[in-house]
Image (cartoon, rainbow, N blue to C red):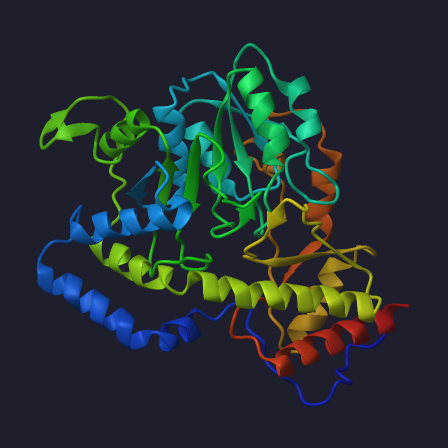
Length: 386
């Protein structure tokens, strides 16, 4: 670097995320919900869980048919969806390598084989044009990842799935509230897997997840799978069951936060548009994710690609100026040691993208002053490089 001195004025601190501020915003309501649950004396598979499942189902599809099953994580949501769909050890599941580790861990945990397909160079999501050439006689399902709030091209993916009789699990961990052709992400495939990890758009205050399904036969099976395979107490009816229950305290918190979800998503949507406009106005060498006209994103992250590929220098410079950043994700799944044996083909778009991207601070409590400081600092960094 030619110049790491901050010439924007007084140094500020911008957190990547601020969960504490979210708690403070609704602290009294959260405290009441938690205390109400504690006083009830019922902490697992009770009324709070049932209430949240019904509210979340209504949020997703209104009065249309469907069911929600509360779980402890999106990892189990993907895993149990594949089990309920009948995916067997040795069968193949098509997905992408530009995703969080749990997506792939869930597939491998049932003995299935992940088959990685490259991503579109503009949307950074599953390139549907490459699906068919990766289908074999062993292919049984697809896990379609909606990333950073953007949605994969479901209008192209679902006909392929139906043509080859493949089950589709939507990994909606990062797209809770996003719309595709007017429908909520997670309701377009056969199963919708949701994460309520604290950092997500709808976040619990601990681990939590859920599955959305339309067919009752899957709903009944999933309820058993999350509770040791039991159809009734101490009677295990189906194999493959685990302990993956959404606890009552987290369910109560989620029911409360669900009331705020659309408002928080709207704030972050406007923030994303502001970031995009700043990048264009300042002519910064950054690329942001292309959003399909079919999508209204509920942004979870704002991820930018450095076109000059100096990510480490940028992150170090921003850190010196008090600005936190992260990388989602620094290593493609096909290059992770745990999954390397499943894949030998190159994924050129994915493998280049993960070297170039950086996640900027992005949450509903960022101020206009924060934004101005962030982009002045970015401008100074790139001005120092050229």
